Amino acid sequence: MIEIKVPYEIGGRSYAGLIVCDDDAAAAGRPVLFMQPDWYGVCTETIAQARELAEGRYVVLLADMFGTDYDAESKDFNQLLQGMLAVHKDLGFTLDCGGTAYKKMLAEAEAQGLITSDTPKYAVGYCAGGGFLMEQARAGEDFDALTVLHITNPNPVVPGTPCKVTGRVMAIHGSADPVTSKEMMTELETELTNAGAEWQTVLFGGAVHSFCVPSANFEGAQYDEKLCRKSYRMMHDFFAETA
Image (cartoon, rainbow, N blue to C red; front, side):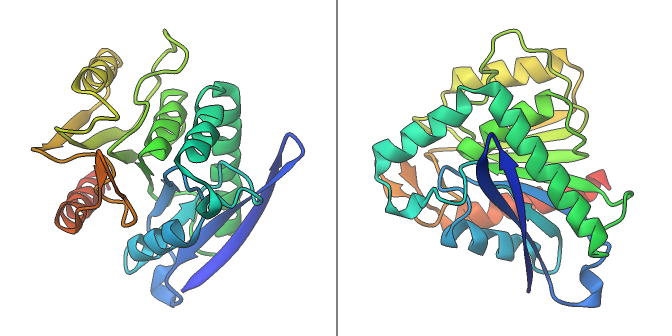
């Protein structure tokens, strides 16, 4: 596979997104998939997820929201939580970092001949990355369609933020998710309805948080390979319908 690091700087700190796609001529012209990973950011596990999604389907743009020196895999639960909340609570930073990652990687992918300005643009967010992605979409980022998987923080961090979502939205969630309640999901659905967005929610009965994160294995968060595969099939179909 092709993997291209794309550095950028926010507030004097270094970040590096990653473009991932098949190493063959057929990769050029495939849809873009902007990926906001979970609270581990760019690491061994999320790069593996990006490779899986890219294979035969997309030019994946993996965003870095935490910095090249973050080393998430050495952090415990509370450290990861604090790192995620620091980003989540700062809407200006979320939009600046997420938007910069997206635009820099789009420009590099086009310069490498992997995409054109007319290439369909999709997005996926996992857990906290789903929340970051929704803030970007809410601010009007030009995604044709986006999918959020077991989203964390689905509602605006700044209450009353106008919803300028331009693309189709699919949320795939677990009915027993202890991190994001049904009430929070209902608020998101109401927000999207009021904004005139085309949206749908898929709810897996009994599923908890992080069913698409292979390392998830603690109370309230559990990887489920069957549900993950099903989620990906639904997402691929959703994007294909959008094209």
